Structure formats: structure tokens, C-alpha cells
Image (tube, rainbow, N blue to C red; front, top):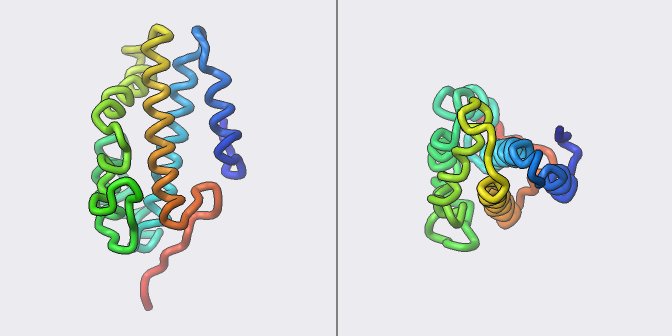
Length: 164
């Protein structure tokens, strides 16, 4: 699948290898995995809370599963960080603002859930391409946000410690 040592181009290339009639569902699953990996690293690295708290607290990543939870955790930890800026909308750091086409992305991300849980296992290619492209664009949006705030997800997670 993916390795931490992979870079943006390697991950995107791996995902796009599966963008064909037969494997579009695999491409969507890989894109969703990349999105979740990316958002978790950004939350850990750009939050003002210590990493151990972000990882272990039930309010944050410990019990985080699904797009709604990621949105909630992002909006608790990232959107309220006064040191950060959204290059596209400086006054709004909420995830639904950082991801430019939030409503479409939210609908398209449901395909990931349907594929994984078996109730939407056979997408037609056009439908699958729309979902894939939406997930890839959302990942690009949060990746660009992190870059604009001085963090590259393909480097080590920034360590935030408890003040002594």
C-alpha cells in the first residue's frame, strides 16, 4: 500500500494505477486511505494540544472514524488555532472551508463507505471517477493548507508536548 517514506507523487501514482474500469473501487479505497492518513498527520502536527492527548483522548483521534468525526476534530483542534491561516479564506479555518467543494466531497466520500461495507461494491466507471477525483481534490486541499502553514505531511509529525 503506502509507506511513510512515500512522497506525494508516489502516492498519487499508486492510486491512479487503479483508475480503470475494473479497479476503480480499489482506487477509491486507496484515495480514502491517503486522505485519512493526511488529515490525521495534519491534525497531530498543527494542533496546539500535545500529540499524546490528540492521539489518546476520546474527543480527538482515539475514537475518530468517518468524515463527520474528522470534521469535528479538525474544527476543535485546527480551526481554533490562531497561528494558522487558510490561504483561500483567511477568516475560516473549518474543514468545510478548507475543502473547497465540501458538499460534493461529503457525498462522494460515501462511496468509500459503500465499497468497504459491501453495499456499493460495483460502481460504474464514470461514477467512480467522480468520487475518486473528489477525494483526491480534498486531499490536495488539506495538503496545501498544511504546506501554507509550514508543515509537509511527508516529513515527521511535529511533536507538541505538554508545557512543564
